[in-house]
Image (tube, rainbow, N blue to C red; front, side):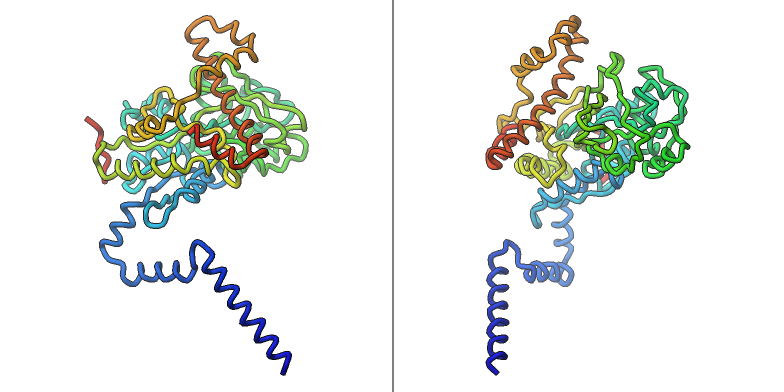
Length: 411
């Protein structure tokens, strides 16, 4: 009998403890369930309207890519009950995302690569397409990653070889073919989904697989290297310096493909958050302002774990050549005194790269050099943020905070 009383007492104490912990949590699961039940049972036309009015639909990229992870991060940080919901959608890459932003009624915003619109205009698929787009912010730089046997030392060694450049509605092929045209490189370009292409490479049916995406890119990180393969060097040649940036990958990024202590030079292209160029005052423009308010305000949280390391490269006010920023986004940055990269640090970069500084004689050379500086700045910012976080996590959040007639799309 005494044992039964003891067990009963323990059960009562456990129940009290659980109840106390439920009160301490920010959300009581029972209350959340009740609120969802109310939506299903008593939801009306007004409920439907309110939910849709505060939901932003974000088109991302393919499974395993950086875009999907970035979209998931935004939803995790920005969702705020009924005030704002970010709904990421798995997409097919940058080219398809451009079409989705233009034509799908429910798509509000998407992740797009900076060179995509130029490619579409150059190939005659669209005319004056940039006038129909605006951007919220540049996100980060996406590196070109070339996986090939160790006999292939540089991108130019792929002349005449069988090279997979992902699917034709994605974005890797846009960057690869643009780079190839500028370098005069001719290969047997094949459109094969990345996971299948990786297996064909191992079987000897391909000579290389090229992936363009923010490092560490999941499918590249997961490549099961048996020792035959590595990441190939992509030189920052002059024909590429107008639209691309220099970049570096190390064994810390891809220990499966780069030997410890070594680095592989490559190029990178910016990724950005793009939207249709809605007229100010329209309801779709209002939704974008809601997103900007939440995103820019909560941006520092994205620069800390567990979110994608590429967020550490993001500078909200960084300009993007050839693109027009969403007016409200620029107003927010101005009102909060968030400035782009300070030119003062350019001097520090020049001191560390005297040979490059000496060769920058023309305006075009200086512009190319400044692009190199921007890439260097992104790398330095990421390193500084990591150092500060190790010393003082609170200081890390504070530093990140400091960086911190129109066409008509059918409704």
